[in-house]
Amino acid sequence: MAQSEFELIGRYFSRLGAQRSDVRIGVGDDGAVLVPPASRELVVVTDSLVEGVHFPPGSPAASIGHRAFAVNLSDIAAMGAEAAWALLALTLPEPDEHWLQQFARAAGDLCRRHGVSLVGGDTTRGPLSITVTIIGIVPIGVALERKGAQAGDAIFVTGSPGDSAAGLALEQNRLHVVDPMSAQILRDRFLFPTPRCEVGIALRGLASACIDISDGLGGDLEKLCAASGCGAEIDAATLPVSDALVTAVGRELAREYALTGGEDYELLFTVPLARLGAMTQAMAMGLGPATRIGTLVSGNGVRVSARGGVMQFSGAGFDHFAR
Ligand code: ADP
Ligand code: MG
Image 1 (cartoon, rainbow, N blue to C red):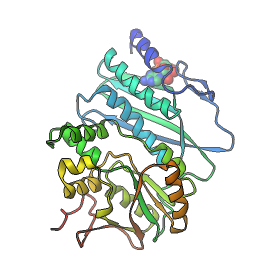
Image 2 (cartoon, rainbow, N blue to C red; image 1 turned 180 degrees about the vertical axis):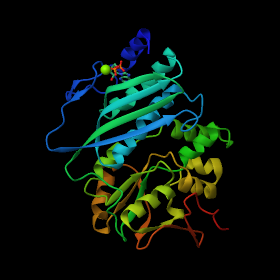
Image 3 (cartoon, rainbow, N blue to C red; image 1 turned 90 degrees about the horizontal axis):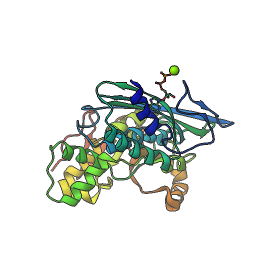
């Protein structure tokens, strides 16, 4: 991009996020130089947001800035790592100062909160698209994986899945909600998801497997099951649906949103029965809200019991809950 556009980058991205002593050279040179911690492993994740694909055209810049980093922080959390350094590849139709300011402020707030320093990136002109890469740090051998869970392990989920999908439906005028307060809560869950970074770190040594929910609880649980070579049984009545979601769409549809919605960026994880005590203790010490929703079983696939019936998850979704 032209010279004046570099000045914009310098203004908004040269010191974004936390200032870390392990960044020897950050934004401004041909590459960043980082000082890796001794005797640790690095976890590297990347995720793109494309306008019209991952967020509706015209979404607030603050939301886009927040989500671009939140979705990557969520992957770092799902691995049990501590986020440290980030790269930002930004493609913009034109450099709009107000847009950049809002984007950078939201991204910077989130990065500072999680101790992440932006150390480099790239800026090009084109249809709006944002790719963030985050590098995290984890003690050797303790990173959480999708595999490793076994039949008998308890299944937990953080937060209240389904809110974000309802929020997106509201943003796209596919859903109409009478109660304005509930509608606002749901929109905010889509626009500003909370990556569960502290939970991911607390789950080291406790969880047998972990995944973050980007594609919907049911589908992501299927992935965890496939990686671990087992099946899952969950009880729809135990799904932690929020009051806002129940107010907005009713309890039955709320459970469907929770199972099939997506973009939740909650953690879905399993705990062996022998570690349930330690897990309860960790939750009491501030691990945060996590709800047991079922149990892993031998076999494969995800079954959901609801109202006395049992449904099989089918990849795309579930059948409507039986009357
Ligand atoms: P080069 O042409 O050598 O690749 P650039 O002119 O693209 O360098 O970038 C100059 C500096 O600004 C580099 O340190 C690069 O990492 C940083 N940078 C460019 N765009 C961004 C961005 N969107 N976010 C963070 N850093 C950026
Ligand atoms: Mg260069």
